[in-house]
Length: 324
Image (cartoon, rainbow, N blue to C red; front, side, top):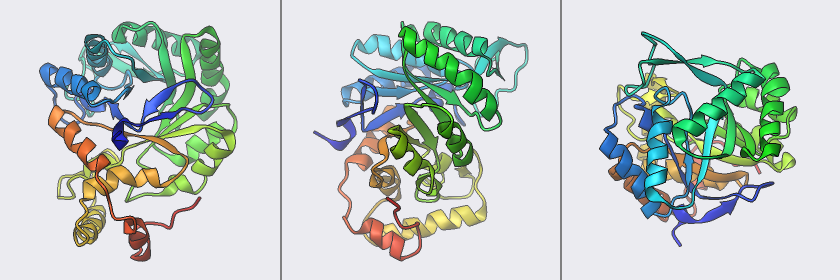
């Protein structure tokens, strides 16, 4: 079996997910618009390639990604594991800020709501948009500035929904380690999705978050392996952590890419496989926006890299030494 379609158990649950999952921020039009036909083809291709794990959120396209994903899941008619997020609700609006999402529903505006009622409303509305009767994994989304609410309101509300069978697992989906650590220390999470913090450009997650997750028997899912794109195409105009990449970041990414190229390793393959180095990591999400992108990501993920490549990157001072 190819690496991308291998299944691994989510600790503390009965869920098994593929080692490569599909993140659906691009299906909300992240940075660029995606046609409905391309969205349908992408999800069908994921199933054809043996991928069973799909991650989404109400924020992505102001509900658009959930609707598109739900349509694709129903069309496939195959078993899947689904995660979505809570922490924002979508309110009616006349002229909302669409942010990064070119395909955003312009009649809706995402508003932070970390109340117990807001969490229940978010799940109920996601169920309708997705067209499913339960959510496998519910993740607290971008709770960086809402840590007390996440601990004291959101987690208890999700734990109650878990006990009712509306959701199967409780986790968080975050971009930064410090708030993730604070929440994990004071809750009983099953899963942590961390984006951009264990990549070729940033290994912060291995310092404290990963050891804490291992101690808590919580599974780690890695997103943002390209750090918003700069590791896929390190040229002027590339994005890094959702903002235009600085000249310094582009230079770092190019230096890593040149080092890898000397060893006949592609930058994208190394970026996709890098998170698998750490035993805390369960699976990797890729945010493909087309069938061609997904197939390219699968090929990179399944490719065989020289076993010494990581130690060589460490010795060259291009990445931190692995901490296990």
